[in-house]
Length: 127
Image 1 (cartoon, helix red, strand yellow):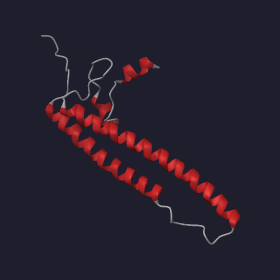
Image 2 (cartoon, rainbow, N blue to C red):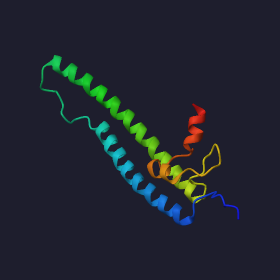
Image 3 (cartoon, rainbow, N blue to C red):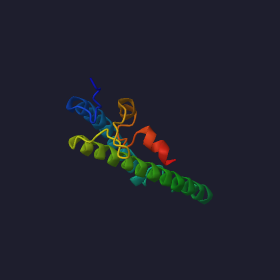
Image 4 (cartoon, one colour):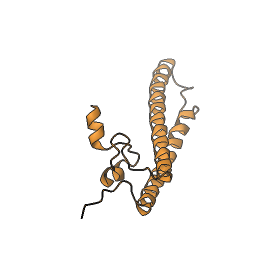
């Protein structure tokens, strides 16, 4: 008898992945909100009463820090969008199918990178 090739994850497996993604999404959204809050905090640790030289140095450091936080926030937002798209794929029952090869992405990979859209084989072929 021929071995059947699995073409998609079962509904039970998809529900398991959905729970994992929802957990990661909750944490990612919380982290994003913390980053956004730190960007908008402008009055904290002000240098109004210190020397002008120190104030210039402090403002330069704050600008660099703010730019870094903005970069991290943008990266976090991208991660959130990718997780949300993974939930859409779960709803359409296409989650876990490599967009390049059409093969099933291994469960181990999806547990580590739940928003993955390609198998390792496809990613390495693009390099």
